[in-house]
Image 1 (cartoon, rainbow, N blue to C red):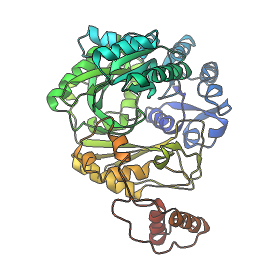
Image 2 (cartoon, rainbow, N blue to C red; image 1 turned 90 degrees about the vertical axis):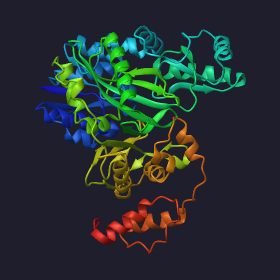
Image 3 (cartoon, rainbow, N blue to C red; image 1 turned 180 degrees about the vertical axis):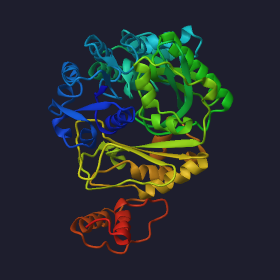
Image 4 (cartoon, rainbow, N blue to C red; image 1 turned 45 degrees about the vertical axis):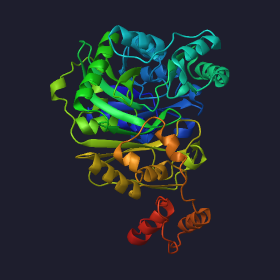
Length: 496
């Protein structure tokens, strides 16, 4: 059997590996800028889509379907991002006689509407935050805010990934925030409708993984803590959540299963909740796709979610039982982005000059790059995911700290230094986090970087000269990647 992988980067490579383990062939697609990416070279066949612009390549539905049929594929897996939650793409795949490796198009449409999903949750008795239907004008949002009290959250009806969301604290902010949420909804989802919710103060973002077959069986695989976010996009995830008790896990799981069954869900998905400081929880949304953070659940529950998603899409029955799905140990994932945290996470495109992955007990890296790769500006800048597992949270965080000191990426800025800093923070280590935690953390004073020393080390590393003796690292400053590279070169002679 052949499967078209309608995506790029680390998730495309993850899907290709899953296909190979199942004895299938995988067909990759790529844009002109991605021709030498690792996932393209790992596939059994690869087809050029077109120019780098997403609409000419990874968002080009007719071209993707044409490639799938012309290469003899039986199924299409969308990964995440791009067209993964696009009902029109799912329907086009099915109309071409191919298997869509995701939930049915009508389920994507139902749950893709945040307001319709909220209504479904209410119907099955799952709590939701106070909110509104789609709003025609800003005065309706103002009336809602005055009724429930500020702050409120404006959200695009078709939104996701933090797009089309605006927190509003006063009447004065409302008109501009409403216009911006409308504009983002229209730009990213072709839907300018906006609704409002009461904003829960300092909540945790907790999500529940589900698997469902065509016979109506649904199981959950516990929860993931996803509260470390910037601009509503996750950076660090862990399973299980340090705030969730076994009793609360059971309640969250039952709520997630109820929503999935009511929607007629099939394959893998995620039901997201807000967890308030008092322990109450509220339905947020359903992601009708594989999640970036799925590896932490795989490590804790011992289940290959990608393979199960593919098998369920082909009609296989779900043989996993809820009673047998018991968490073991603790896992944490850090998303390694080509972004500069010191410049408000500005993208950092360029060539990866040096790439060294960590290894050792309990360490997994799902990577989409290698040394010499070009990181383009055209797409989401995720490079890799560092995932660690330990027998408990303390051991997993110890392994994370150790792995971060081994991970070297040079040539582009990355989020690795930020994770090194987080691993020194007492509140993060204690699990005392919320969705606004990272913003507060970044506002804390810290030791300034040494640009001259970094530039000198970079020049020496590129020229092949030995680095100078390093100065002691000030307390609280993360290990510099150039210093680490210098140590490795002296000790192991890794570079010519």
